[in-house]
Image 1 (cartoon, rainbow, N blue to C red):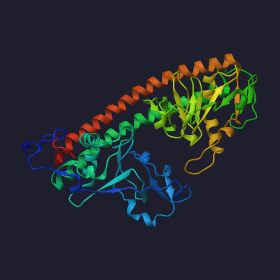
Image 2: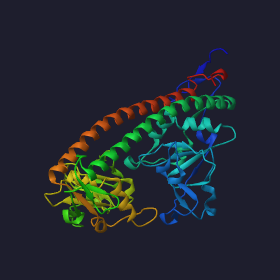
Image 3: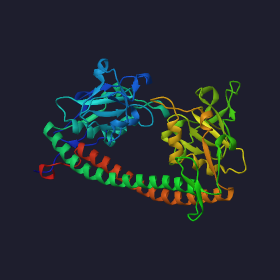
Length: 434
């Protein structure tokens, strides 16, 4: 076959396309179905039909981690079929997409839509277009709302899509499936390595915080099942005897123009600590923005604690966190705040909190109950050594993780670039390439 001739589209983010291709709007090739606004009361862990929410959208979608619903007959219009393309319509994940590969029925929650190809379009080709750079460009161009960005169904339906003949769409899909599988396999290997490194970080925290830095020290039984043996001279105390809890709050008489950095549960990450966002004014803040936090306080999410939204607070003024946190402040010279922050991050402690939480979709614990938990108290100098040892090894692991993550990001960029080049005809696909 000879070289292809191209024509201009006058669409900068798509560029030239093969002469025999067309440009159409997405609504020509696909139906778009919005999700339904299920309430938390609808959900249960005992029922069988998963509901896919915006945070569930990922290439390796795990239905076992989705919330479920019992009554779904009235929601049959929101059932997801194998091959449907999931798409996030709001928030920080806007534009995130994945192909639904399961044969099991699932329902579509609000803020998520699905694309389902019509008879004149190959579903895999459509999925590649939606995962491309030029589609993302259109999302960025049309979304509104700043931090809580969203995009409407009508906007999506009018997005531009290259439209080759159906037989070429299928050829392109086969080629990209072959190529992206290799890229995805490499990405998965690196991501598995990253997860193992993160597990190593958790393991070293568990080890040093409960056993100390001296492996030769004499041990005794702690009497606490999840801890087991501890160094003989270590003490055990309840958290409430060594810390204060939720000391300071903003009241309704706070100056409406007082501005502060507001920290929600979603802003705190076990790996990276606290995400500091732009300031907001009290008059514009949510009603749960009430807890005053200061440097070296330790905050623990009391809602879905298994997500490990736990961190020590950095030395930054005007920080206010959600009432969904328990704020611990060391009130005893025998307790080093950094040691406390590591202790409450241990797997055993988190599991104890989860075990004593109430609720199904959003299990929670009261701060009053949380501070009744036991805390190991090594001598102060030993706490300092533990913190130094963990911090040193954490930094080493962090550097390796960051280097590995850069490789993943480069592969993802290459994947997107390859897809965009192929679905816009910049790379010509022939049968011998399959």
